[in-house]
Image 1 (tube, helix red, strand yellow):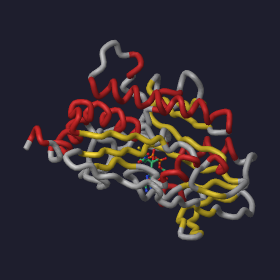
Image 2 (cartoon, helix red, strand yellow; image 1 turned 30 degrees about the horizontal axis):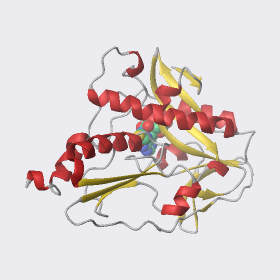
Image 3 (tube, rainbow, N blue to C red; image 1 turned 30 degrees about the vertical axis):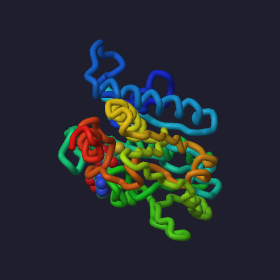
Image 4 (cartoon, rainbow, N blue to C red; image 1 turned 180 degrees about the vertical axis):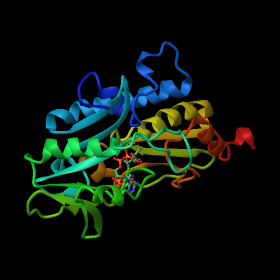
Length: 275
Ligand SMILES: CC(C)(COP(=O)(O)OP(=O)(O)OC[C@H]1O[C@@H](n2cnc3c(N)ncnc32)[C@H](O)[C@@H]1OP(=O)(O)O)[C@@H](O)C(=O)NCCC(=O)NCCS
């Protein structure tokens, strides 16, 4: 296994989140889903390009010519949700594994997660006093056992519960919270679809692109509003960090990026055409 830095050659693999082992950029023909996944990755890649000069970095694990995992991190000052200094925060990481719902199955490469985290620690240990991370990412919400092997311990500050690894004494961060200011509107006879999305995880632009397309299919029956909440200004203005809503409610049954099929099924319930 080889660990590569974040650069033009690795950026799309990183932005694809689970590694570009499907080689989307190189495929001559893409399915509709792959096309959306690639467009979502490009939106994330644009965000990465803006953040790299500010200090964001990543390590990408390759097995042969396939990207199989990554770890992404940045100085805490770049986080919209934490107040702190002398710290780096891990934004996300993944190594080959099988998600809790069973697929897509990706055979573990034992040691991959450790190699990625070790490479990150090496990179930042002389740039900060410590590293913080959530307990886990996305659907793997408890990776405390994994992180504890590297000296991460739990802390709690103003209700913020995270893990910290200290290289020297350092204050843990406090949370930045936003007050909801956005008022959901109801329009008789229409479904009002609001999406609050950010570029940090490609799952959000993936849902955005699918929602945009499906709402077009429904035409006049939908009112579609999209809000990018990549920065603190937008978060202060709307006060909603993430999510897609219909008439102010979260109607989806599954966690994670929404497929067109699921969006259609839900929107049909609001549509006169299908009643
Ligand atoms: C957690 C994760 C990074 C571990 O990767 P890995 O390559 O299996 O890790 P390693 O092989 O280096 O494991 C190191 C040690 O941690 C342990 N470990 C691995 N995953 C663990 C977990 N979830 N909880 C507790 N311990 C764990 C291993 O058993 C191993 O223990 P050992 O040293 O006693 O043998 C990987 O499973 C993962 O990426 N999970 C999904 C994370 C995710 O959801 N990301 C967002 C995707 S959108």
